[in-house]
Length: 217
Length: 308
Picture 1 (cartoon, each protein chain N blue to C red):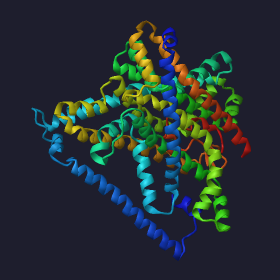
Picture 2: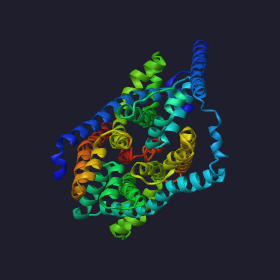
Picture 3: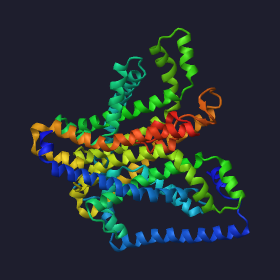
């Protein structure tokens, strides 16, 4: 642990990077994931097809592979220049996590009683009004616990960025371990604790919300 | 699919039909345009030149057999599958032990089991793999296996716990009342049923396992992604596109088949579970939505015992 305290600045910077990746990619993937979920239930065929293909591809390819694809295929195939480092990590994490957000949202939409949508339609709301004002607000409630679980995984997935030139917590553990071989166990223990500092409260929150929602229903 | 959509919007009238048709045409054009544009960009960057011949006539004294069998299949696919095959039995045993401990009447057994699951679910697999390689001086393969085992035993234990919690309490009571000990009840009544209703979630976890082997690439273990990197180093940088594309297709194909299997089993259970009395909560079959759980990473396993 001594090495961690001696390099507190370094570790704090790495911790902030992990937080930054988690939050920025988290927000982006939420927006994109909700849009994808809307695509998947929309009346317009091509949008549904796009959503289905997207989900099947991105949910079934490892995050590390997405990084490699962005690194090697983005420029030649899409003419897209993504800067190596945080921007690439945020893009890869967004593309990846959004597919899970979408699936959670979709099952949330399915969990809202059919009568709700029927009632909304019966009073003349359009598709977007039905979805935006009746279904989604109710879906969000039941969706919160699984959504938190997706985001716990998302926080841990930011560690993959360590392999692609981003200096976040896992990369800091790697570097410190290389320079302080006598304290390796302590270093990993400390960095693990820093991750738990983020993920454990999320897990507890998920359980709390789940219990509350279960009673409310 | 179609049933759930018809809830969200009316059977379209003539006006809506025209509108939908216009949107369908517009978005089809947009997507075709996007694909065409990607294809054109790729073409003008010379992606479709002779670099693809590396897959059947690579030159440099190598043959297509060397590329496909020696490199991609043996070194790559087998490198990815090997840790999975080693991990699965270990995870099954350890997860069962943890599950049994968590159901124990003694807190001294319950609490450590709970702490272990909570801690290892909250730490990145990559960090554990690095720990194995750097601190424990394990070989790369075993570092990868360590990371996979430690994380997945926690997740699988959690899935099984949720499965047990989802069983009607009469199952346990019946077991106890015919004179079985609590452990016997757990092993012979509760666990077999819990495993059965959680089967889709458990199979989806294999997809997570397969995907997580790719973290070995970062640690230094030689698997499918490494093949996608090593071959271009040998055959020239222009073949990067070729090999990354091949690796991508192989990965998605393998994982999609496993996901399909999970969905298939779930669908079968959904129809069958009508016959198995008591295995349903409310009007929904118990167990997390297989689709979401494929999300895996333990997503949703916690919610298995709620009835929302």
